[in-house]
Length: 306
Image (cartoon, rainbow, N blue to C red; front, side, top):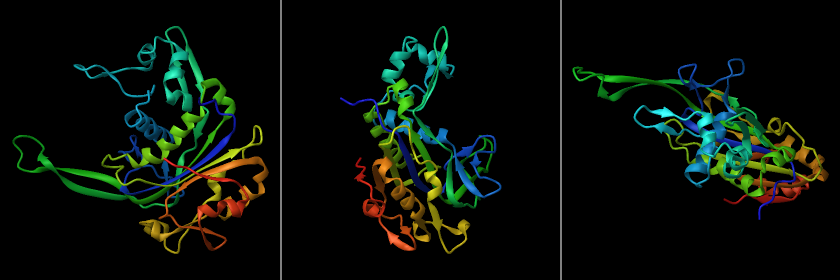
């Protein structure tokens, strides 16, 4: 039987997208989110959690608390959070037992008489591209006329990114896990949702997203983690960042990451890895394979299998 997690972990998740919009901003004509000062593409943690939730519900048949449910088909009315809690008899224990997303990410549960806040054991920072991006504005024609009397087709416009390599950092807190009952099996499904959920996004703006690297550092030292692992990956290329179009145009430098893992090896239980072989890594200027991490950092390595 799966047990509540007992060790802290850090996550690195790297994926890319070509000719798409990884996370539109509804307050800015749904354009891709870009840091105006750095030119870096931003993807919110909410978007990533939505990817995981949708995958676990649609592909794994898991109950999800935070999802859109129409309660009045004729009027198209959607449930609010109180109505959703009512689906579970306003029983917070039942919600935690049945809804994997609350065990993972926590949330505010508005019960009939009061609200309960559960801090999620799994938290992600905003995702950021490892390079500057260039947004392209695309215009085209639609398939239909604007109305029955029109002779011209409608026009459509959209903003896309030719390429973006996006890195997310996350942490799994074993102390918070005690309050939501997060189990080892839930974490396995989380990893599945990150990798395969990203591949399964086949909407028009998300088609073509590919997971490239998933790394999970599990600690043996109590109440400890290294932190800032996302700052230890660097993109190396000889071309302007805005011209990058595929994994063939750059390498990911893991030198800082390997050195830090080696320095902290006595605090690390093991490291779990899944890497796409089309992503090229370098360490101190030489080609590097993630399979060699065990020898390079002196840590135990496990391959993540889905």
